[in-house]
Length: 113
Length: 119
Image (cartoon, rainbow over all chains, first blue to last red):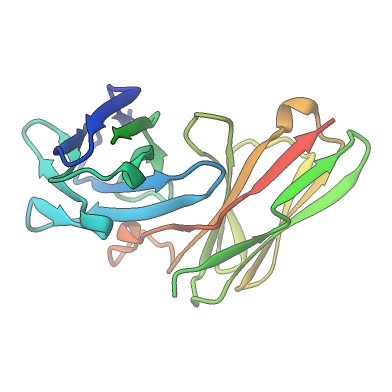
């Protein structure tokens, strides 16, 4: 079965510190992996995606993600968190040969001043 | 420009009402999607349109009726909804769907959503 797991419901980090939001996946074949962010009462905003190539993917707003095939992970990272990064983050996978995005359960990031 | 627009932003309706949600994109995308999202939960796929044809219906109750009048517009017609249908309804679009040529790598771009409350 194709699935995505975000093991942390919430991540707390102080402003200026590095942040990591974890994501692991289970997909048959090569996965296409995405990160989205959602601010309160808003739609999802695309941050970045991994398709192939370099395992370190750079995205919007200073975010990056590292694809690790052996650990089946795609963790989202940022070197220095901002209070404005506080939001709900979703990891998603699009298995090959399908039109569907499979979302993780989401991780709420709280950045404290 | 990666904008998907949705109207209305908020909608309150009774269980006997008929209403419609609208979604529009002008990015030339040929795939459009409807998702339902409950509070603090991930979006759940409802429908996918590919080249204006319904390609996926995730066993959605018939009280939800999608329509794709042209490649830029997507509607969701609502009738006889239940209070448990209250949710944020998200529209998304992507350049195209297709299993060949790497189209599965397409990014889906989401609209801001319509907050629906069924009384």
